[in-house]
Length: 244
Image 1 (cartoon, rainbow, N blue to C red):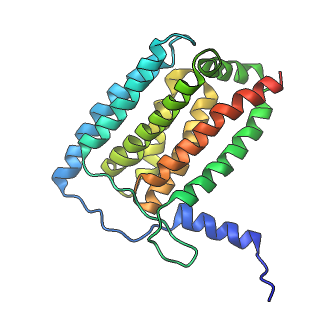
Image 2 (tube, rainbow, N blue to C red):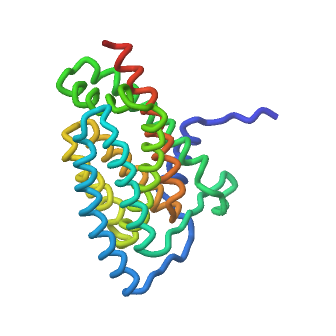
Image 3 (cartoon, helix red, strand yellow):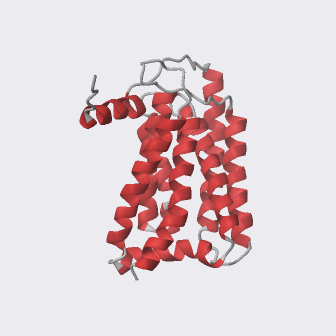
C-alpha cells in the first residue's frame, strides 16, 4: 500500500500543533503570585534593558563586551527564577497526544526561520544602510573569540527565554501575553540602533511567544531561540562576506 503525503496538509497540521492549539494544562497562580511576578518582572526589565543597551555599544574586540553580556544573561536568569515557578511545557505528537517535549517542533521552526533570514541576508547585502549596522554587530564574532561569542549567544538565549517567555509571559496574563511580550521584547532592542535586530526580535518574539502559549513552558522557546541565533551567528557573517 502506497501512502501519499500531502505537503500542504502536513504543513497545516504542523502549524496548528506548533503555534495555534494549546496543550491541556493547569498552571493557575494566585493573585499574590501574579503580583510577585509583575514586580520582579518590571524590575528585571529595567535593569536588563539598560545593560543590553550598554553592552551592544561596546566596541568589537573589547573584553568588556564578554563580561557585560554574560552579566546581562545573569540578570534575565535571576529575575526569571526569582519571579516564581517555571514549566518546561509539552507538545502535541502526530498521534494526537500532548505528552511530548517540544524539541522537534522548536527545531523545525528554527530551521524555517534560519532559511527565511538567510534569504533576507542576501537582500540586505545590497543595501548599505541596512548592512552596515549588522556588520558592526557581527564584528564581535569576527574580531573576538568566536567560541566565547557562541557561548554568549547560547546563555543569553536561555536567559531571554526564561525571562520573556517565562516570568514576563506569566506576569502579563493569558489573553494578551503573546502580543505584549513580543512588543516589550522588541522594544528592548531598539537602543542597539540596528533595524534588522529589531525586526528579528519581533519575528522571533512572536514565534517563541506562540510556542510558549501552545506548549505552556519555556523549553520550546529556548530550543527555537538557540537554534536560530546559533545558526545565524555562523551563517550570517559567511553570507555577507561572500556577497561583498
